[in-house]
Length: 273
Image 1 (cartoon, rainbow, N blue to C red):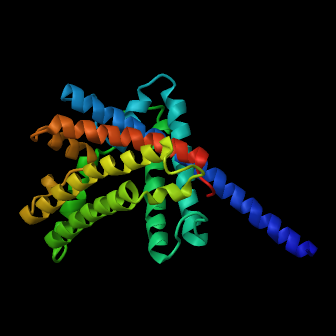
Image 2: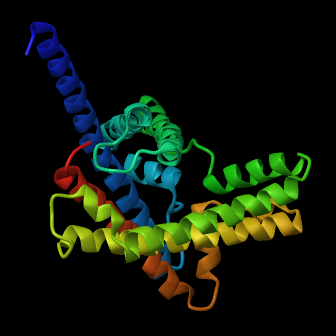
Image 3: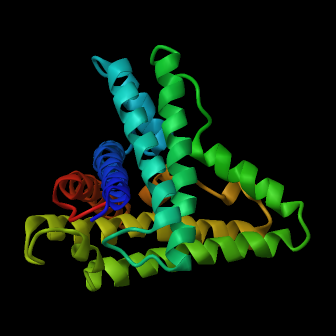
């Protein structure tokens, strides 16, 4: 191998190492975020109320109120920023253990934007000294977004289509991951391992919450009322008032907790990133 080839190979290897480190650090933060949301959903299911909303913003506030909350906000914030950077990288160069056609790359690009937004939420709170009073609730964000879209031509039908798309994603996650166990290909373990079980439970039960949010968005579109568009916390509060609401919330809470644990396991067991 020539000197130039050696340098190129070393550079490629170094870039891959950095991408791998970003992914594993980011997955830890993602796991913590989902686990905290799961705890808040569990509190809502058991007590009929929660001290804070079961959402990303609610998780940020919950962490901020814990001992050493500011330090934890910095760690989770930078972890989510690493996750966003990793997904931005995979959008360009692909993922070594997942399909990387155009559709996947579009999804990774969208995830990079979403994770960056989550990271900024946590880092902004850390800069404010852990203040848990700021931040717009996810319900307010969902209602504001629906209100804006309603003003567009065919706005109500766009909202309905968005709700149906969310329901479709929830169904896809259940079929692709819970039933077919496609995510297991990322891991250095057998399909019978505990990590795979956590992933199947997490993907499946977490998707129930997304499907419910999609249904509420469809209803908001048909009614033309932005207040009916709900974020994750509002969706879970709606579910609490329904028949079998407690059992439904318990299932969703278990799903978020299992998915959080799976993300932590993936950070260790992922074959490559």
